[in-house]
Image (cartoon, rainbow, N blue to C red; front, side, top):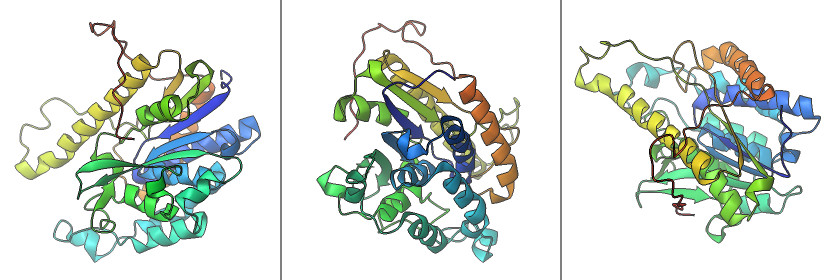
Length: 317
């Protein structure tokens, strides 16, 4: 594994229980470097399950503690009930209380502003989609607007996938509803333009939560209208993911950007708690990729035939 640069940032995709993959890989990283993740990363950005991991790092949890959190509570948070059996006749599949209780137990009562005052200081970017204002919100510890937000509220607001959990405060849903299910561009922008890091002295590690296997041609020929929801959503998420990776790779060429993901042999849902043993093995594979610097290919502007002029479209920070 190539050594990290002076400044190190982390970006973690959404994916529900598939956060097991990332926490497992990070636990291996801690062991290899001999220090906890809050001493490895100075910036962490996450959406949905990535927000849980990012907030956990900022609160001083080790990667192994977060891995055990997923393992111990997966079946509790995604516990089957009459709601899951009668879905989609119900408004949501799982109550939010088990997730909220778990976050309070592991993260505590800290506010976002408290994170900015911790030592070592870690910047955090958590995304949520505001249905009232119809925009993605970027929740950060140094922004006055969010200093008083409990960290658990910010994480819940980022994690409540529509139809899986009830929405937060009648307006906030999973940050992946927007274009930032993969928040690597947010992390790069935060590092370069908010923290003023030198890209030549910065490493950005971006973790996916597993890629579903490809479908065979003809599979969708006989689909009914309601069956298109999942593949259309998957197409949007994959396109948004590719867009974020492309932006970082081409707009910040001096940045040491390393994007890692693993191919899943079968599709695993965000509530697939019964697949935790398999997800743990995928986490081991992710670590092997990190250790061997097996990053995902990033298409370049020149290779795609673009004009080559780089502009930096800022998100609404």
